[in-house]
Length: 322
Image 1: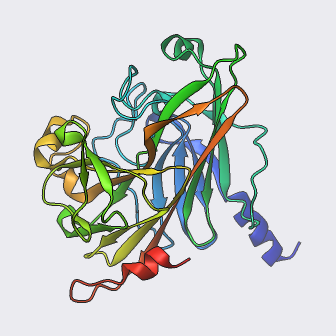
Image 2: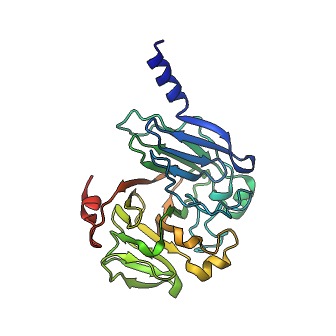
Image 3: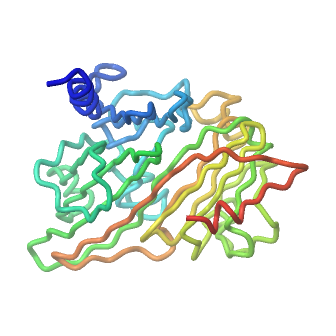
C-alpha cells in the first residue's frame, strides 16, 4: 500500500472511535478529515461535543454537568422521549436521556446521497423497569452523522413494537444547547409572526411580534407550526447556526436567565449568558404510532460564518438558501 493509501486508511479507521469519557462512561468520537468532530455518550445517546474544523466548540455543556447516572447531563443535546418537559405523568423530559443505549447491530437502511462513513447507530429498547412506568414496547434508533462540511445530523426512528395491538403516543425534542458569545447579543430568525405557548404564563398562546427573537430576560416558549429552517445569529462570534428539521413541527426556545440559573444545581450562576436552547420538537400534538408503525424525526445543524453590518445581517440568504 502506498503511504497515501495508508494515510487514507488510517484516517478512515479513526473516523469513528469508541473510548472512555468522563467518569469512565463510554463514548463514541466521530472525526472528519477536515478536522470537525462530535462526541456521543452511550449514556442517553447524548451528544456532548460538536467542534468545527478549527476545533471551536459549538455546543454548550455546563462546567457543573454531572456525568453520573441516573442524573442527566446538563448541556449538549439531550433527547426528550417519550415525554417533553412535565407534559405528562413521567419524570421531566422522559427517560431516554438517562438510559444506557447500545450500538445498533442491524440498523435499517438510510437513504443517503453521500458516501459519508462518519456516523454511529445507537438503539434503545425498554427495560422491565421502563415498562412499569411507561407500559409500551418500542425500538428507538438514533443515527448521529458528522457531514463532510462539519454539519451534525441526528436522525431518530421510533417504532411501536407492542404485541398487544396497542397504539402509543409520545412527545419529543432534541434539547440542543448552543454555545453563544453572549445571550444579549444573539438573535433568532425564522420564528417571526408565529404563535407560541408561553411556559412562563401557564402555556397561554401568543403571537410573536418582533422581527427576530432577542433576549433580555428568561424565555421558555414553544413555537408552533415552525418552518424547516431556523437561524441563530451570534453578533460577536460572527457566526450563524442554521437548524434544519423534518418531522418536528415545533421549536422550543429556552434560556433560564439569572434567577433560574442560580436555582439549577448543575448550571453555573453566570453560565446562562453563554447558552441558548433552540429545540426541534413535537410537543403540541403528540405523535401516535400503531403497532408496527415508525416515526422519523431529523435535525441537521450547521455553523456558517456571518458578516454583521450595522446590525443588519442577511438572514434570508441563510434561511432561504440551500
